[in-house]
Length: 276
Image: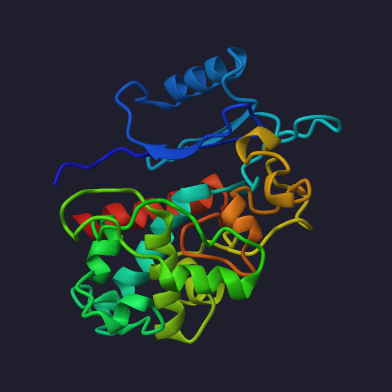
C-alpha cells in the first residue's frame, strides 16, 4: 500500500475555532507547512495553530488565548477535540470487537436494554450507529444539565427514518456507543481510553476530563457554543466547548475530549499502521 502522508492541524483561540485532521496535496515538506500556517495566522483565519505530520514535522504558531495575557501556542497545548473525539469512541469499539466482546452486527439494545426500542424488536445495530445509518436524526432532547432527565431522554429517543435508508450525522449515535463501551468495560470513558487506547500509544496528554487546572489550554470564543444559552454560565478555559458535553454530568462518546497535536499524531499514525 502506498504510504500516506497525514497532516494533523489543531486550531484554537480563533473566530473559526476549527479542529481537524486532513491529508493535503499542497503541504509536502516542512517549509511548505510553515508557509501555509504563517499565512493562515497572518490572514486572521486562525489566532493559533499546532500542526504535526507523520513526516516528523511539528510547527506551532500564534497564541492560545483571546485576550491578556497573550499566551503562545506550544507543542504541549491542549485543544478541545470537539467531534474529532468520536474517533476515539469508534476506536474503543473496534478494540472491543477485536477482543470478541462486542458484536457490531447485534442490535445496540443488546447492550443498552434500557432503551425504549429494546422492547420493540429493535434491528438498529451497533454498526448502524457507527455509520450514522440507523435512522436517528441529530435532535438533542437530552441536552440538559439534569442527569436523570438527560438519560431518560436518551433512552426514549426514536429514529425518524427506517434503518439503512439514509445517512444522518447524529451525536446521539456516538453517545450510545460511548455508553456501550462503559457497559462492556465497567469503566468510564476516560479510564477505558487510558487503559485500552491512549496509554498503549503513549498519549499522555489526552483526556476526556475537563482541564481547567492545566496551564496550557487553547481558549475558544463564546460564539462557538452559543454563549449563555440554556442558562449555562460562561465557560472557563479548559471546560468542554460543546453545549451538550458541557451540560453532561460525565464524559460522553460524542467527543469533547482534549488532546495535543503530538498525541493525536500518535493516534493517526497507529491507524495508518493498522491499515497496511
